[in-house]
Length: 165
Image: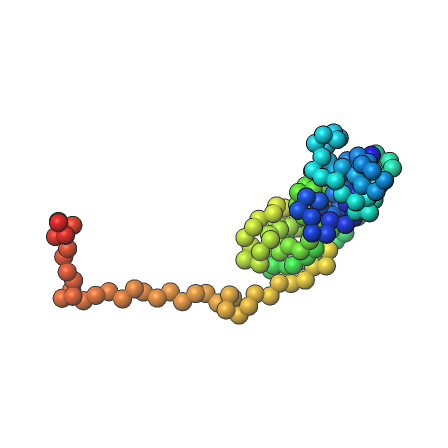
């Protein structure tokens, strides 16, 4: 049987929302495995941590893609938005908050406001709750370039690596 972990608490092994294979052990516990093999279990856990999935097909279901909608954003600005959906092939991309550099229909998304931690390029309708990201004043200004101070010629000193031997 299979079940979704609904209560991972402080477990280092379980991940909330993940589907596991469950093998009964006693009246109130399961051996839990990522594989359909009892011998590959990663521990025995109380049954209350899992919601049993009766239908195997339901375990494989993916929510439907949100409908495409017109999203008008300024391509010269950076936005903060919530990733609310992705294709099953992108399930390693966590749902959550990202920084978006929008294009016409897609947006490049990043984990950090300085646009580091590139995550990819997804359609804009996979994101929701767009809000403009305002950079702090100190980041908007060009850094002041200071020329290194050069020593006057009378302060120069010729050295040689052989002077130290």
